[in-house]
Length: 230
Ligand SMILES: C[S@@+](CC[C@H](N)C(=O)[O-])C[C@H]1O[C@@H](n2cnc3c(N)ncnc32)[C@H](O)[C@@H]1O
Image 1: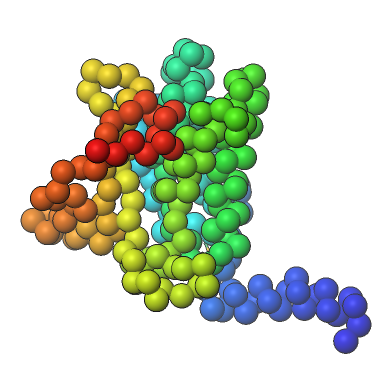
Image 2: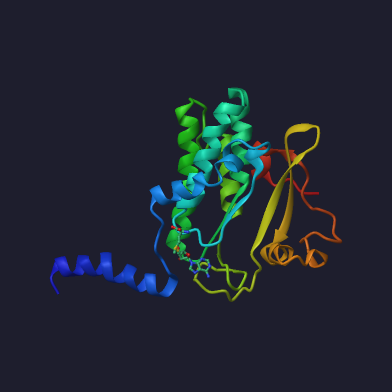
């Protein structure tokens, strides 16, 4: 096999195998944009648009997640004064969730979200690198919200690609605290509980914390990475 053939094999055949095994075909950006245009009002203008939640069940490289974040951040600059942008940008990030099975796509999705977040702040001359709480909180939110898992089984996928740990995919609500601007209250729940709710089986809505005291204390959203618990 020539070098050219080897390169073609890497570029074409391997992805082709993955297309077959995992349906790995990414939606081009112009189509992502056209689809998001259909929910523009909800995403960019409705009351509480910052907190409208989105879950991408097959996140790929994060193309939808990033486009959603981009629109929310752009809308922030229209609806909020500049001093609110750091806090509101974190709430925007906290509202976006994803599940992805494959390690490289999962890493790409997380990285793309953080690059989008960083670039928004850099563009407005707001300090946002890993020495800042802003970026540390953003990193924590992305790592918590965008999980490597199998959407079909509902289990997390381990580093070795297996589901041997049988750990349920778990997300967190990042609820605003009434009367305390900028404060967040974390509340965990399982993907399974979301499914039951979607099926109208609200009686079975088994919030992870039901019957237990919520272990998380409320905190300013830019401190969320410190995971203050009781
Ligand atoms: C058709 S691509 C779509 C990616 C992205 N949503 C888009 O529209 O561009 C499907 C993605 O889902 C992932 N995937 C396949 N099976 C999955 C599963 N059971 N759970 C989570 N992700 C899965 C694949 O690795 C791939 O990245």
